[in-house]
Length: 220
Image (cartoon, rainbow, N blue to C red; front, side, top):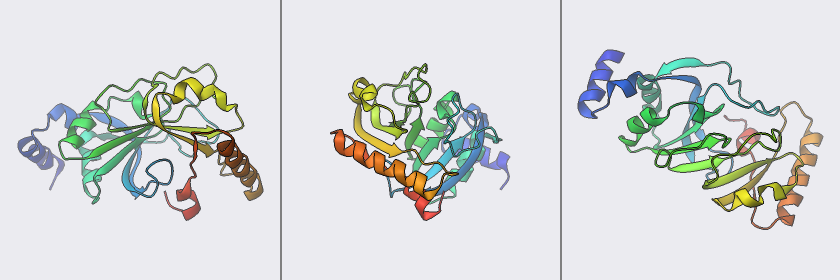
């Protein structure tokens, strides 16, 4: 079935707005995998990885400058091919884009929506079911964290003082520290960071350790 026929079917059966179906997004990739880190580790999700970002962290494992422009209907078709009702918007920085069209298309079909954001852009109430904020002010001290509440606060530990998050913690239900993993570093170098992070977790009550288990498993 061609895209126009699908568009007509979606509009007729799901009452989709043609503007939502036509909304364009920069998409790096869409894939089905198991969440490897944080609160939902071990749970399958469909990952929608957006292009572009307002920060450039040295450890980022995403080439967010290389992407394909996709319409809402194209994103929806790719998500629908997987037997999974949980979707994560990640990036790059997904909040650089208007996510309401995708919200309407996906919630109408019963999807649970999560987001992984750096928190520099406020997330409107009702847009996302599970908000995970991973602030990068340990690298960009002049950046302002505007999203100060959510479900999950996930800090990448690079050696910073943890008291910088004392005020931010109160707005989140779950608090994670994740060692900064550098793909180009040696096993020994990353091992030292893992050990340091484990010690930090033990010394700071209320934080839990998060590990990127998907990288150990060799999956996306």
